[in-house]
Amino acid sequence: MKCIHEYLEDCLSERGGDPYIFTKNGGVFLPRTFGETVRDVRGLAKSLSHLGFSGKRVYIFGENSYQWMVCDLAAMGYSAVSVPLDKEWTAFDLENILKQTEKAAFFYSDSRKELIAPLMEKYKNISFFSLSDDFDRLLNSSETLPDTQLIPRRDMEKTVKIIFTSGTTSTPKAIPLSQRNMFTNWDTLYRRTPMTDSDRSYVFLPLSHVYSGIANFLYTIISGMKLYLCSDMRKINEDIIAIRPTVICTVPILLEKMYSLMTDELLEALRSVRFLYTGGSFTRPELKSWFTDNGVCCVEAYGTSESSSVIALSKVVDGKAEKEMTVFENLTVKILDPDSSGEGEIAVRGGSVSCGYLDFPGNSFCFDENGFYHTGDLGRLDSENHLYVSGRKKRTLITPDGENVYADEIEKLITENPDIHAAKVFIENGEITATVYAEFCSAGESGIRAFMESVNEKLPKFKKIRRLHIKDDKPGGRMK
Image (cartoon, rainbow, N blue to C red; front, side):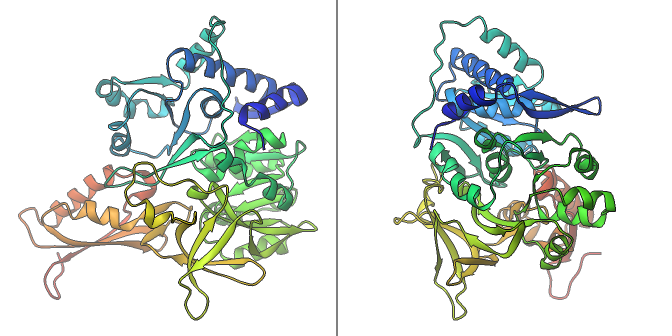
């Protein structure tokens, strides 16, 4: 196992002139080479070090981009700690973490500029940089800093990345990941699904999540795989037909969309995909079977942010993926308090598992003294190490696109209104739904609806309440 700096050195010496990251410009995918990418990573790291951000947090907030990826590698590999943030976060979410942050760098995309502007005035200890304008300036200024020493991060145990869990009413939990955590699973993943420099990966899932950020991006500095970044989610099928990727990471809701818009041309392109990973939430067996029966290698994955992504993955034999997910050989999974059918909470231990949440007093409930992370997922394990996931122990809602939404937190936010005595948040017809129980008040139902709109303003897009039922908090009552 090497550190990020060493993998980048290999990229520079072995494939420096080879195309690496393709982004769309004027309707055409244009590449940056491995050499260009490594030099930009080092240049940005040099500037960050010169500005005093060594060992500090580097927040990255925006949609997937080449600049995003360079920031991530620069922070992790040399100068700081990468902290990717979900692009759907609101000002409410951002303030939850920024108010506890000392000196830090914050990179943002132009699409988030209006959201960031008020924070610039409020948090003077944080330096804000535009991923479009300031990024190039920092790269250019690095050329005039010959005396700034660039020190690789060779300690495999220190935190180089922090992933935040979903937070709604309080500060999100911070998951620290080391280079050892992130690279531990590579060898096992490669044995299951050997990706090489001849592969082409089409990337449309958020790089701020470990699923895409580690397995879909970070591992490419080992495999040498080419990356094509999606610029428009409405054109995924069109891009797949044009690119003919051999590796795709997706989630069930997007797999369903591919299926619903299937054409002969798209199916032909998908048959060229060596590994079509699907994870993040439950995939209908009928959907997987359809893709498999039509010659598409659909590989189901299960993992968590706390375990640096993958815990179990379907094995691929002769180009076909098995139906069952098998636990990675380098990890240990056990079932806690199994019932008579063998079902209980899934716990995992191994080098990919985080050391525990930062500054979170409830650590012991999730990470035990024996090194196991208690996932909160329910499942069973058979004698051949096949893992069958059946649901959640906690009241965590998993949306069709694989996002985790904590129902208790949203309910707490709703019941801050004194006129609302109780609330229940759940999934109905694939959408986040709330039933609220309130007394008739001076504002009536319109007042409750207005309040619920203010709750939604605090929530990122994937957590917003799409369906609302309002009931009078009296036996048999219902608001009119």
